[in-house]
Length: 112
Length: 111
Image (cartoon, rainbow over all chains, first blue to last red; front, side, top):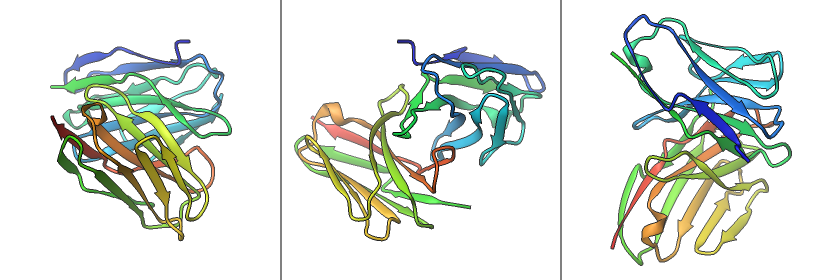
């Protein structure tokens, strides 16, 4: 079982560039979410989705866009990267009933 | 908005000593979850507590949920080097779509 797959694992961007972090899950979970992890800040929710076609903002949504065209995929888009978006990004899907979050392995993004 | 405070932020213990991390929410929670993240890894689910005053054990780990459902703790008895990592609590207020994490407690175990 692949679980939650994130790509790329590492990325370096220049300020102003755009990019998409990919996330796919093969567990048929309805709920998916994106978090960023920064030292001393824990995991902060960026955007989440409760099903295909439905997305909503989390705690720190500014500078990020998401879409959910299929149950499997939940990409995160940075429209114009800023140094403040240097972070480790985790995608997660939620197990139905248990509420357990299944995390991908993370994407480390550096914005210069 | 909902805040989940977690202390301490760092803890160094000698192998064999006990360890506890505490979580406090500014609002009443429906559930609280605990995760462990090994260095360089991703968070992995440990357990979920749902009932007021609930206590659950997993081998050397004991999890508690407060009577008011606003605080929780994770206690590890006789730490081992395999316990090294960051432990996060995560609070939920109805539904699974929005989860608020504490900042985590980074545990170092000195052999």
